[in-house]
Length: 120
Image (cartoon, rainbow, N blue to C red; front, side, top):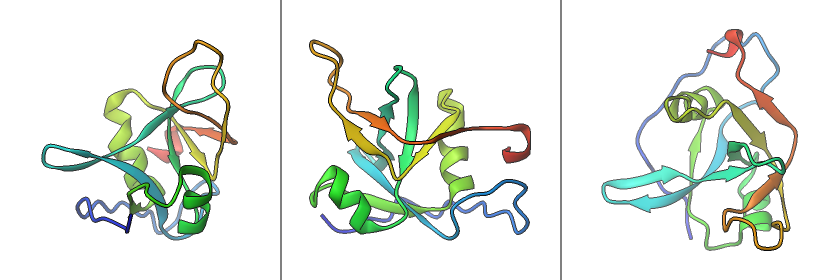
């Protein structure tokens, strides 16, 4: 499925205080009543996390060619999920097998960066 626009969420910090991926990230989304919403995942220990990919090819390799996505900056994605109580972002994760009999939500394995006071 092609790239979709979910609104103009920008929040690029011209002088970021922590290392972040340069440029835009490809964020998997799911359809909702009035557009789309970021898809959320769980880490191997069960914590909810936002995920993003540095290229469309990496997103397709992990989630498949039919996964809709949108382009967001890291600060915009963090601002989008912060009200949901999500304080982690996995960039370029690889999916892992779910625990037998576990939740249906896919789990991700990737370095997870917690929100810090400097990232807010």
